[in-house]
Image 1 (cartoon, rainbow, N blue to C red):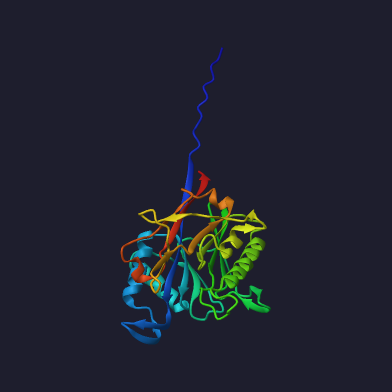
Image 2 (spheres, rainbow, N blue to C red):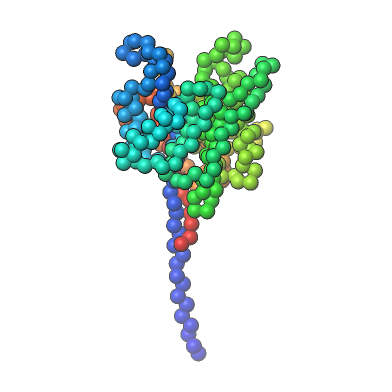
Length: 292
């Protein structure tokens, strides 16, 4: 009788980790602002604030970062070059210029960008008037380990409103969120790996957030909870009212959530975080499996 010895070689599973961050960099542009108690028109962001923002990005070390309140392309390229001087190269970029001519959406990435779509024409009915998203919707597609995935960058309207029927612009943001959701639904029919990152200017229980998390009470995507080193969840400090709240989110499809390493995220919280921006950077890690 012959004995056949079978040697089974183990299949080694490899994975590519990708860290995705979102950061409202607070007027990283030229705009009207108070500097040392003096009003300055069309004044750039102070260098000290820029340095803090850059250091926070470098410390978080994301592979892809979604930016809000960045200026025109020269400001984005300036940030790109400053980060490179600090040893962090982001050779790929995308910029979305919407109705707001000062503050824009952008992406810096180490991963090659497969395609970019700037949705500048999304509109909605608002108290019998037709309105557009203030900052538009930036869509960037990547491919990691053979898997194509979408990153949508958003920045909903602030709570400042001139409409007495909508004193803190909740209705406006809700309409923006619905328009974004409907567009994303159309864009991801064939690919359910997507995430939505940005500043929503509202809380998790608000109508704008609900509009993105649910469609007719059915789940559309989930929120990845983010925490700082103390377990706190606030991402925005409103100095005038001395209040802290969570307004920045990483929303993911259920399929994208399955690639999340920890099913949660991190809030970067150095002591000087609020000196560079009134928002804190948030990020989460994904693991894209492959067989080698």
